[in-house]
Image (cartoon, rainbow, N blue to C red):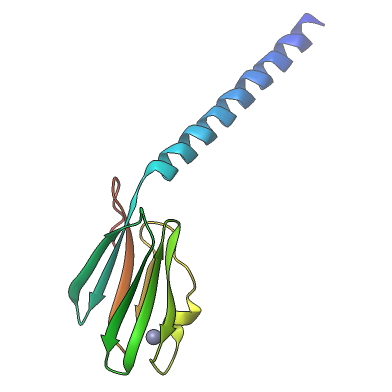
Length: 119
Ligand SMILES: [Zn+2]
């Protein structure tokens, strides 16, 4: 019976460790601020920290593109490009994620401020 109890304690300890690590990991991820980089014609046009909300309007070959920057991600709200792939990509939220608009040659990238994910 004592052996059985020790097993339970062991399982509980492992469980507590796992949960603790999970929250520490999540905490690190959340505190890792993101930077949104917007490239147009391969030129870096904007570099915005995701600590506030901002709307960027780019003049493109086909008209304009409206990019919304929020604390939890970035997305293309409006675009006059013909394929609308950038619109359909939705919101990007993590470092390393990108939105590309081939017709307008716009490239939006999220980068972690601490640990960068290079593509
Ligand atoms: Zn597009």
